[in-house]
Amino acid sequence: MLGKNRFMVITLLVCLLMGMVLLAGCGSSAPAEPAEEPAPEVEEPVAEEPAEEPAEEPVEEPAAEEPAEDVTITWMRLAEWSEADPAIIETFEAEHPGIKVELEEIPFSELVSQINLRFGADDTSIDVIAADVPLVSSYGYRGWLLPLDGLFTEEEMADFLPAAVGAGSYDGEMITAPLSTSTQLLYYNADAFEAAGITPPGEDERWTWEQIADVAQQLQSGDGDQVDMWGFQWEQTTAPYQLLPLMGSLGGEYIGEDGLTVDGVVNSQPWIDAATFYYDMFNTYGVSPQGDAVNGPDLFVNGNLAMLVAGPWQINNFAENAEFNWGVTRHPYFEGHDVATATGSWHLGVNSLSEHPEEAKAFVKWLSTGEGAEMWWRIGSHDFPAQQSVLAMFATSEEFDEPPMSFNRVAADEATQGPIPRPVTVGYLEYDQIYRDTFQDIRIGTDPETALNTMVERLESEMAKYRE
Image (cartoon, rainbow, N blue to C red):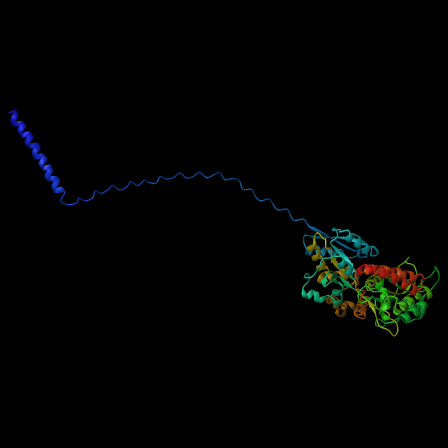
């Protein structure tokens, strides 16, 4: 029984084995489909926690900017301009926020020496100066002033009087801006003429110097220390500005062509004749005071001077203060000779060492053109304007139809009649001082020809340094 069962188990195992072999053979007859690889597992993105933003630091508001400090420029000018209306400077400052103008006022007798002293010491505290125009060349020679080329428009340049532009230039560059020009008039005390039974000259009537000398002797009253009425005086008694027209009328030159030569010029016959006339007025005729205890304009306004040669800036002074009738006429000349009148006046220059050159230039431009120029004439110095547009007012504006304002119209025209500028020379400072010394000597009695020869010696010595 057991053997039979074992036989059956073995038989079953053999059959099973054969079936497996057959099954494997069938599987090799055709390629099997590749098993499908499982798809790669895709990781679900993990939602990131939002990064923690850094704590916001408080933003500081920018500090409010401090307002820029005003720039203050200093203008060195004549003390004689102290009566100029403050509205001029106030108007400039209002139109130029951030710029303030400080004044340093020096008397005329000291201004030139102060400029020489301080500029010669490289003083930076002065930004703008009032420059007497014949000194411009000497300032340019020393390099004391900044060029102003490009500061003015073509229209503004064309409005300046051409002679004023030339006088304000050195070595081909404009270094000063014309502030004013000038001329001279003969003022007369009409009441004194009437009392003496003498007809005064009309506004357009030009007397000769010979007439002046004759009438002055007739109008003089009193003698010695008790003169009640002097016959005649110059406003600037010894200054070349007022006296050079004496030489100019007689055909004399003011200096040699090179701007340095004086021998054969200032001791020439026209100079000797002119200086002799000057000598006679103080010494021979005695109609002009030898001292300066009281100057010419004060003598005139006080009623103690019959005739005075002075600038048109005195018109307002006499209109306000003279308590007598007075008039004006043209500048005198020598009979049979040329009309020669004084010209030139004040310019503005910028210190080459200024710490505020642009602000200084802005002030110079404003005061020498347009509104500033007209204000300066009307309520400033009353010096005649150097701008043709302002001068044109005198011929057309009704305000100049009646005296005393009409006297300005006479002066405006006189400024075009025979004007001769003072000499252009780098040595003008020396020229001016020696001229004054010479004519002061003549005024108090030194022989004119002797004085002029001494003047030549002194000037030749001074001019020698500019020839080297």
